[in-house]
Image (cartoon, rainbow over the protein chains, first blue to last red):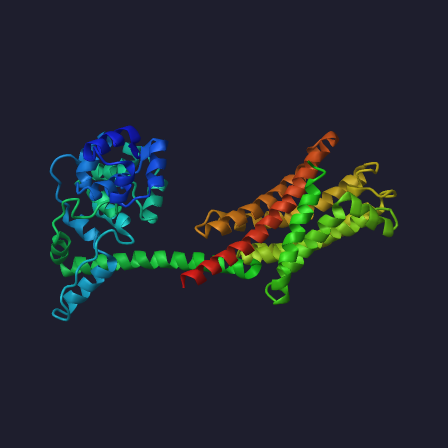
Length: 240
Length: 235
């Protein structure tokens, strides 16, 4: 559930006491109608808060942590685990790393693309899952397991669910927000070269195995998309 | 409202049929154009005013209704096969076009003629509602609902899979309309349970089914055009 608009307005007043709504929207780069609508409904999206925080040069994680719902985020950032870091390396970067390792010196290590990548959410959950995680999350939050799965498949993670998942897994509270694309890794307090270091620290066997797993999952997704596409085309071909 | 509904349905179906003329002339999916034409013609004949005129030409003993029945059987056969192929249901194609489906169609057709022949059908009236109803007319009416119901039952699972899939939203909505129309036809199997005083309910269900099916089919066409246009704009 997004942020209560009363609490949000209190926060906004603390951040920009003299700015008008129009100013806030201009600085944050959000539509006035969007913000107005969210305020009227009484629920402001976390992404709105993050945009405004960025506009006013405040750390979004700290801004979120002022809300009771996100009290987990208070205090110093918890460093991510190596598994979490590697999970936020895009598959194509992972494959490049495999090539680099197999043929050293062929090319300089390229820059890793920023998270989120197309399967960030599922990879992150898989990385912190001890086998019982989904069950614990569904008990703690009341989300049905199939709905949780649907989020993973759609590569989205509502911020509240992200924090609940981190809590259930016992990892730093901001990791899921990075995987879900709400905040950047820098905002979460991850060191800039942390993902590269975690990747380099992997043994070749685990790197290759992980790349294989990712390719297998990607193949499944692509096959499903192709089948869906074929089905749609057949309907249009016959009845369109 | 039930007096206007048939005409509204006719106008909608006619509009869709006319809208398909250009693509039919270009040779794109003529079958769909023929299906819409058949549906439109069936609806036209089923409405009281045109029915009385046409049946008058045919001798005023409700042969018009018999013609209408067979027109509907043909419509459902062609539409059923086409939709089953479109929604990729091999089993539905086999059920409609295979031995079972053909047997069902022949049996229903033969029984329709039989029941018609043994009934005193003199005196034109739309839906034969002005005649004295007995078991033979009940049987006749049941046959008229049975075959469309059979075809609908064959198609429902495959269409439902598309409605619940990740296909483009417009296509899913259109398939939903089609599904609704077919489900109403399944519902119409329970017409004998509706008391005679509530006849408007039958009219409502019948024409809603036709309307919903047509909107669904037209919607599929629209979703294709929309997707193609969007792709062109993006390219």
